[in-house]
Structures are given as structure tokens and as C-alpha cells.
Length: 256
Image (tube, rainbow, N blue to C red; front, side, top):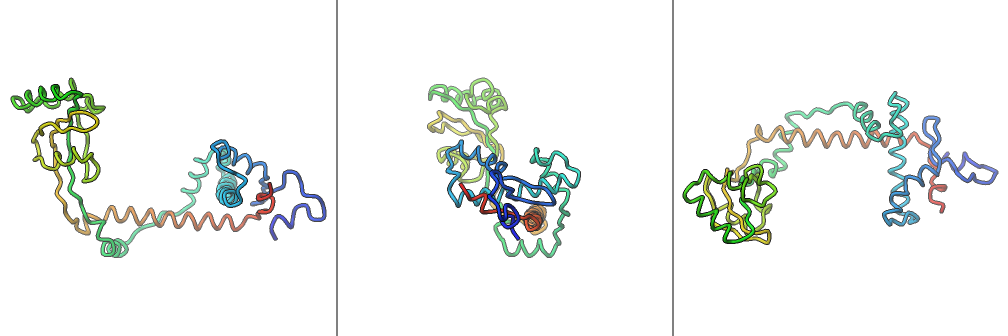
């Protein structure tokens, strides 16, 4: 029997009815309404039936996890969501991934073995074309001055690190920069590339060519993916099991 049949039978419904009963603990409608307040402040229509039902489903999950955690000794779990999540992580066994599972995933998902070509670049960003020309002229006579010029003349946020931008695959850089960067050889310095941000002078630090990794090379990433997927499924099943133990009064929640 749901809570609607247990509470207020033969009498008027209470002003603040119990909406969840779990392991002997009652959670009242006012607690759920308080949980909706941040959404309402952000302009969400919390009276919308679909929205309210969705929010209540999440509320049930959070409450039963917190209450179960408190019963297991995590006393701050109801007030501290991180504490409830810590209990949940500890309560679930760790899943292992067999070599056969990893191999099957490798064979079924060829993309996991693909290594895209990428470049690692440094940049000197100037605000005028004349400044950029001056930097290019200096670098032609002293290629080793790139990092010093980046620190002293560049307007890039990465200037203090010698202009190191990091590694990028195709499609991750502005087209004007990508075209220049992928045309360079390691150690080579570009001419001037112009974007909406200003005038760029680049140095290619490293380049990785497209390749296909072997199963052994791909296995650590595959095992990580599969372990995470198993953990998500196990957590969902565990929370669903807790929710199934709760008595829920949906009618009181949906009433305005």
C-alpha cells in the first residue's frame, strides 16, 4: 500500500503530509517543496506536472541514499550530499574487467584504437602587424629567443609559460591557426597568422601522426571505460533497490 492509503485515511489530509517513508523515517512534503525553491528562483515552473514528477523522482533517490547512509553511520549524509556519495561509493563493490571483455570491446569499437594527428604549439600573440613583423625578424636571427619573446612581448594568457598553448587535434584550433600549425615541422617557427584575436607567431613543439593503437596499448583506456560503465549500472541498480523499499505518496506531491 502506498502512503496515500496509510495517511489520513478517514480524515482530512494533513497540511504537511508525509511523501516518503523509508526505514522508519518520514519525509514531508515541505522538504520537497524547499528542494524546489532554487529551481523556482531560476524561473522554472515548478507547478508543471512533468517537471514536478521528474524532480520528485530525483528527490526520492537522494533521500533514500542519505537515510540509508545515516543508518550506516554516515551521520552528516542528509545535510552533506558528498557524505552520502562517499557512503554510496564505499557500499558498492569494485568491478573488474576481464581480458575477454576488453578484447571484445576493442574488436567492436575500432574508434578506441584510433589516434588522431595532433600538434603541440607555442604562441606569441601581438596586437599590431608591425609588432609581429619585429618578432619574426628577431626570430630569424635567433630562433632560441622564442620563449623569452613570448614572456616579454606576447599578449596571450599563456605568455608567462613561454607561450605554450598545449596539444590540439584537428578541429580544436581556429582555422587560421590550425592551417599553419599542421603545416610546420617540429621546431619550425611560422610566419604571421591573423585571427580576430590579433597577430600570431607559432612554434611547433611536437607533432603526432594518425595511427591505430594495438590492443595492448588501448587496453588501459578500455578497462577504464568498461569499469566506469559497470559502476554506473551497479549504482543505478543499488539505488533502484533502495527506492523500491520506500513508501511514496505521489498524490500529495503533485497537489498544488
